[in-house]
Length: 325
Image (cartoon, rainbow, N blue to C red):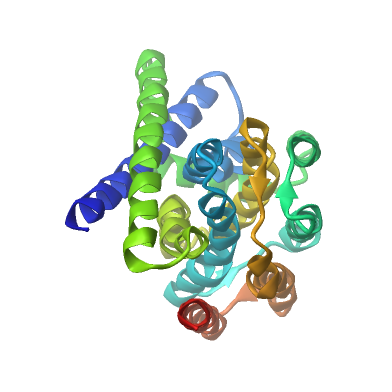
């Protein structure tokens, strides 16, 4: 058990730094190629922080550990809204751009519903994966077209540029080789971290007498969401709220359309029917609740953030009670 704990901790560390290096290297390389800060923020930063979910779920799917593969995604989407945005708002009231509420959040809701519908037959097949992947490509094209049309305001562009500068994503001259090494090192760390996390998580589940699904919904989901946590809370502290919220919404979309658009291609994933008892509906409920709350004053206040955190604690407690029954 102690060895599993060491493996799990090492896996978390590798996943965190792997995502950090991948995002930083890719963002810096993109800047040297002339790509704008807003496009990098909407794509590389938002989706790069979901790289741990992608590698962990794909590896788990390849090994037939469907509980970890699906639980990680459903759990991560719940963690992103209830815990990460809750913590961000508790640190500082988070303002939300109206465009994010009317454009990206509805896509997040549709993605969550798509997962529920496609998984109702008990399997995410390769065909299901291709449908989700097609949706992800369409979303990516849509976001890039919006950026080219200047839909995000100059103020938002400046906010992303400031965030990327503070995070070391603006490259000094002559660092393209270093950026490529960062990307390669990040990918290697992600693979190693995923291997350690999946192995230790399955061992935890067996030792504790709980299902792999519960482990995937809780400790694996929180672990793979650490990059989103770091990005969103730091952005909230710096009063860069658009990045804090946009990172979570983009990550939730990527988790469903991107991760589950890839993982089942490796091997179809079984969807545990027990997810339809609570977890799927919690994911959809939070996805619908977020824009409704944000419409009031276009912000997420501290009290609302605290309520989200309390809701997450209740969710985990309900999981534990159900598993113990």
